[in-house]
Image (cartoon, rainbow, N blue to C red):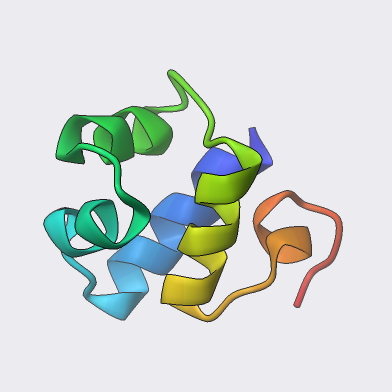
Length: 67
């Protein structure tokens, strides 16, 4: 699951706290943990917020591009 791998990679290298991204995306910290584990995937609205917060393209997170 490319989303899970790339999401984890970006979180690890950015130093972003799960609570900060959860608050920004209006989801629980547990929800972010579940995204990291690949248990669930974000809605389109949440994916948009994640991309905006992390300054990364959705194409990259979804594995549609390598940049």
